[in-house]
Image 1 (cartoon, helix red, strand yellow):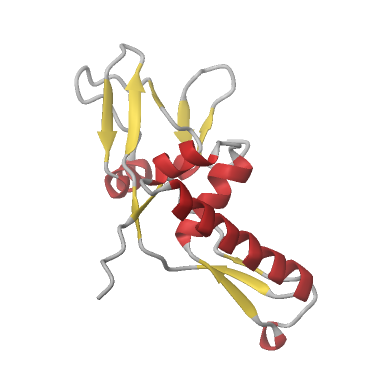
Image 2 (cartoon, one colour):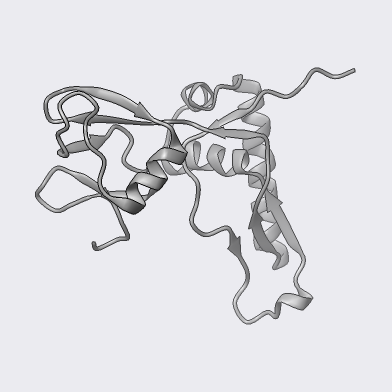
Length: 161
């Protein structure tokens, strides 16, 4: 009996989960499915430029497991690009890592991802110690946070906001 697979840690959930070749009707397309862990592996290695050992540590997996996941993701993407297939991002065995924030007074805290999503939809969060609303996420690419020009602060929003 194989041992149960550990959940992989994912720090980013993409807003767009489906890509297809332009000008090809959906009914004639085959699709390739990338798991959330594979997307995270591509993001950490190819987008953020991390070394494999560091990326594997962020995902809470071994380096050989990270390499297998990265190879699988790259093969699927190459298949889709070379054979005109759609790419669907879905499924996997993962957990979303908490978001870590720091206020201007130096206090740091974690917010579970689900709570951060709810709070960002209602109003900006505040420091749990001093109630300051001037804060920065320690990893600004999570959940679409972007830095406002000149303010040094990050808020959830689309590009240009």
